[in-house]
Image (cartoon, rainbow over all chains, first blue to last red; front, side, top):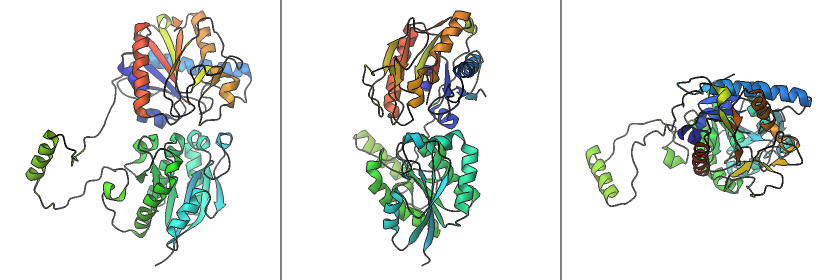
Length: 76
Length: 349
């Protein structure tokens, strides 16, 4: 999916937990996330901590979208 | 002939520990064969004995790949086996990645022959096909019997150090290794024969398949993200509560497009996940954990982004064919362009 949307001409940030799979499917801007059932959350944390976690990951995603890349890049 | 000692690797489901609620268990050892191990043991007969089964949760493995792998290798090595069988994983993505990683590491780090089985579209295939023998299986556990009957003879050959035939003879996924041999017909003859069959519209088999490197060149970065219109897309199956389009929990036949105008938070009353194959509890409690509408609205208010696009797109990645995902994403891409979307955040579970 990532690849086809990118092919349409729109830059995509792929937020996912299993980075090797993202590499295999051909995502260009990859942001590693927390866990498979909750990529942008943490059920053990408080709601406010979870939001802060999401803010950080989405800041990374926006950073990735604002960064020129030549090849598949993981934004740790 | 010496009876071979075998260790079998399984996920939590096939090891009969539990479903998705147990996908986060660390590796554990069980004595003898378990679950599909019974079928393998029956097919091995007196030739081999499954001494132990190592089971690990699929999510645990993929979220803690290094520590999980080290732990599993230690457990396997303690039995000094002659052979390690992993899976088969069919089309289960996380399980396929785990089976491929374990089999490769057993081969490379422990120098013990290893084998696994997967469906050709499993992401574990592309990651590990060049390092380990992966028998080509059907896409679901309904193909267990065939998988066992294909994996066992090849496993025994590998364990005994016998010569392994070509991928098509032995039923494994081509590893990209070429072997020289003398053919009765010379190359020019074979090429002309192939061309004639091609011209006649008959099936023919190339002797040198071109590698399939389908990569898309990255698009230019967004110059000013604070002006950009951003759309959310997910393969994590987030849908309005009740799943109005009936998107299937696996092998999805469609994608959904949902209006989030005026929505600033996805809560348990209004949104849920349609996705099978991962524990849905956390996404159902708060779908923002998969599709972060809450924070993107906040960013929109703060002017960090231009706007959040009115619609989000969702499908279920679980066991969905690559060709289907490609088709959905092409359709989504066209709509996003028509809506003037500048960038996409795509989340996967």
